[in-house]
Length: 317
Image (tube, rainbow, N blue to C red; front, top):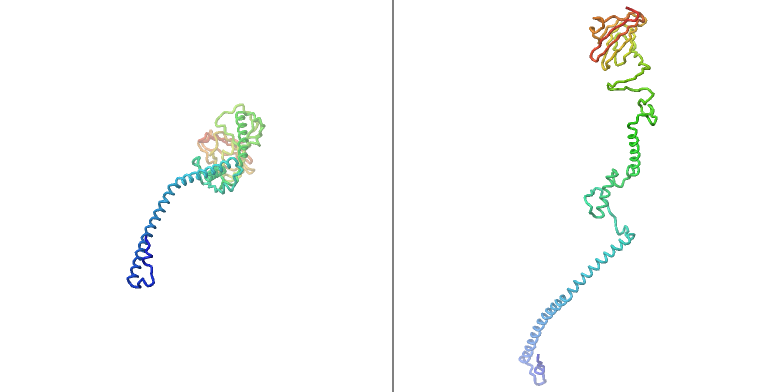
């Protein structure tokens, strides 16, 4: 922009101090200021454009480098992590509780596959331990040990093997006594209970003794004689009495009942339970020996349905 200083310079005695002089100078100054303001506005836009273009060029130049650098950093971190894992695997003693941290086992976690986290595996193992021990908690002490169970099974196996070896051996190789087993041994001893032969025959029997006579006591005025008490029985007649003979539960066979008068004698007997038409050689029941201390033998054959009976007086007709 051209200078106009010489044009507006004040000169003593020459430059008039008038409105025209000053207005012309001020107008020119105003125009120049306005021109400068327009230049300032255009410069700001140029600066902004230049800045944007510069940043764009910088971004175009640096972005690939930054991406490459980030990739290299990520790769370095991955390698460092792998190196750390390799160091742990190569030196397992370096894995401490601090590295592993605390884990809480969930015994309710039932195993369903072969994949899982460390915490899941701990829970699955706790679940199976609890099932094996049968305890309320997986960490409770078991009722026994596997060694004790194995010892018990081994002992039982040996006992079963011995039992199997002796299953058909009836020679009593261990000299077992009746007292030890509560049963009749092969030879000797007494039979302590009923022996049911289920209808099988007995051969070569040598009878050394018989069952003792069963004592029914005193008759009184009424008495029931049960055949199940034995094949040989006796009863003392202490009064005239009604005798009921019961065959309930008795096996088929012959039975003899000895009737004995007391020292007074004369005790009459009325029969119940015996059919009057089934006396041998008689149509009615005979009387008993009425002598003091007199005896009579009542013989009965029981066929499982009815009785046939006869009466014999000892020393009397």
